Amino acid sequence: MTDIHPTKPVIDIAIFTQNQIIIFWGFILFIFLTTLYFFYKKYWKKNISKISNEEIIIKEKIDYSKVALDKLNKIKKLISNKEYKIFYFEITQIIKEYIDGTYNINIKDLTTKEIINHKNISDSTKNNLQIFFTSLDLAKFADKNLNQKKAEELYTMSFKIIEKN
Image (cartoon, rainbow, N blue to C red; front, side):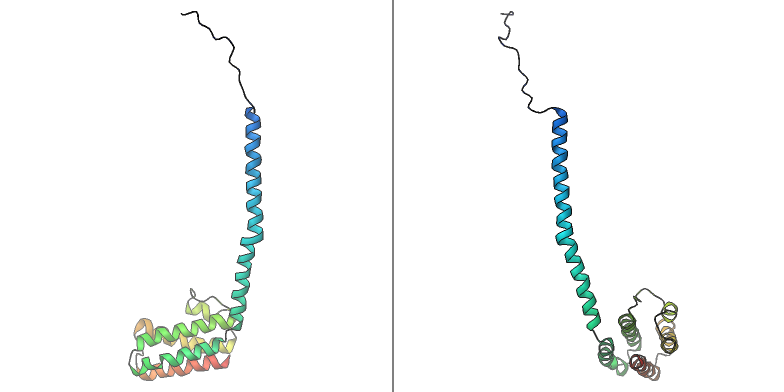
């Protein structure tokens, strides 16, 4: 029984060689990446540009002075409630948003000095902002001038800053 041998030799049925398989999968990968690239160019990038254009159009249509004046009217009650510290922070935010929109400056991370020295702001406005922000900084961070008279003075000054532009 040890003399049993196969009657036919084993036939290797290799349809593709190793190199042909690598070329095949490389071609499939190339087609896949090319398809992704064209979808990116046609759909995704176009949608991003549409959003950017819509944001620009929306930003141009906003009347920043009207928005700021409406917000100022809403915070007037903080003075009568003697919530001066909150008032000072709110009025600072309103004026910064107004400057951001009007002069197209991203001032959220800028200091008072950087805002005042910005090239897009006119000299007359810079002087008003200098006085305004200096007073607000003293009130917010050094607890100076926390009284109704100073709050009303800054409230009036904020209207003048908005109306001059």
